[in-house]
Amino acid sequence: MGDVFFEIQGVSKRFEPVQALSDVSIKLEKGEVRALAGENGAGKSTLMKILNGNYKKDSGKVLIDGKEVEITSSLKAAELGIAIIFQELNLVEELSIAENIFVGRLKKKNGLVDWKGLYEDAGVLLKEVGFDIDPRELVKNLSIAGKQMVEIAKALSYNSRIVLMDEPSATLTQNELKKLFHIIRNLKQKGITVIYISHRMDEIFEICDNITVLRDGCVIDTRKVSEVSYDDIVRMMVGRDMDQTFPVRTSPIGDEVLRVKNLRRRGEAASAEFYLRQGEVLGISGLVGAGRTEMMRALYGADYTDSGEIYIHGERVKIRNPRDAKRAGLAFLTEDRKGEGLILSFPIKFNIEMANFKNILQGIFISRDKESKISERFRKELAIKIHSISQAAKTLSGGNQQKVVLAKWLNTSADIFIMDEPTRGIDVGAKHEIYELIYQLVKEGKSVILISSELLEITSLCDRVLVMKEGKISGELQKEEICSESVMKYAL
Ligand SMILES: Nc1ncnc2c1ncn2[C@@H]1O[C@H](COP(=O)(O)OP(=O)(O)OP(=O)(O)O)[C@@H](O)[C@H]1O
Ligand SMILES: [Mg+2]
Image 1: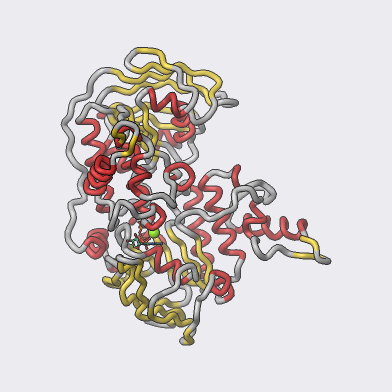
Image 2: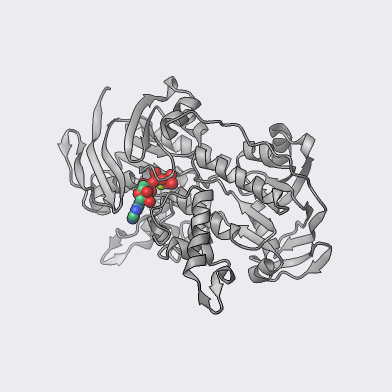
């Protein structure tokens, strides 16, 4: 190791009854990009939150330039030059981009907020991250990816020496990811250290110098990225060799269950036409931002439409809102788990059951017994890492929250499942559980519409694929035509 400037020594943290971190020691050099990897619940975010002053460590030390520092608050962290980009976005929706970037430290002139200066400064930062937008725009009008770029601009606005990135890429488009990597390389050149968390292995290989793997709160090893293979990393993460192949599926495909004609979102010119068969996995591919989520939201009645006919089992149904959609047998697993998926302060069991309270009623009362049976079943099937189903959803790691969202929708009597990026933020091992689950659903005669940005999921899991580009369906691929080249051809 060369020039160690940041050191974590024997840090432990317990959330009764979970030991989230045990005796974690990590040394970081100036200007290195360090991957922090590990399964869902391994302790990555907890460590980041300790370094950012969000959580108090139980024991251990943090040293900068050989001197121990006490990171008692996020303000203190900022003063010490530690910036963080959170896994779950952390912006104030009703404020402008500029106000969000400089929240708590708005520039003043003669006692008044210097709005002109504020917008100028924000504009410079936004340019630096390559986000072409008016800093006066309200954050609530941004896409998730847009919000992520604001978070990054905010992190850069502090003169940071170390930037912690907790799954920054999960929502970014290919283009934005390129920009992010460009930013990271710039930071590196300035001697700034980056800790980079991602469940996407290809990113780790592309941008990181070294990798530290956590398992159950312990450091397993730190290695040079150039000296490890994909399988090595997986083995360190899960503690054993793992079969990375996709499950094989043989269940038959039946008759048409859904047909969509002339579906047009309000104000959009393009309309969509497609169908879905029983027992089919229909992939929706395309670049992030190609309008995949929007098309599905329109179908589900979550966005207004100008036109559209929807037939279920050949019968015309009116879907004006999500309630109509649910009644018609549709379920929508959203990509925005914080905004739409979960009530974070409520228990896991409540979150799993809220889409289908009927299931747990005994007369007009909630049956505790049915309630826990259902939640326990999903806990097992999805390997949700929790100690009790009464735990509040916010105490789960990000990936485990995602699994609860999945459980919530699987617990409905729906027979058409729309899944928007279901494996985002899910670790390599658990992804397989979700693939198995999709196959289980179609085996039971249900149908799945799968939006995914991971080409491998599209090419390996789907029976048919619709590719979208700029709001329109630009191509349809039958089973035998599905491959990454054909998908990319229509996507670009
Ligand atoms: N506020 C909290 N209260 C109770 N338990 C918590 C809290 N925050 C985290 N935990 C627990 O600590 C452990 C580590 O969680 P952490 O969020 O650090 O995992 P992670 O490695 O970031 O996982 P992921 O990849 O899913 O984001 C988990 O068992 C989690 O349930
Ligand atoms: Mg996390």
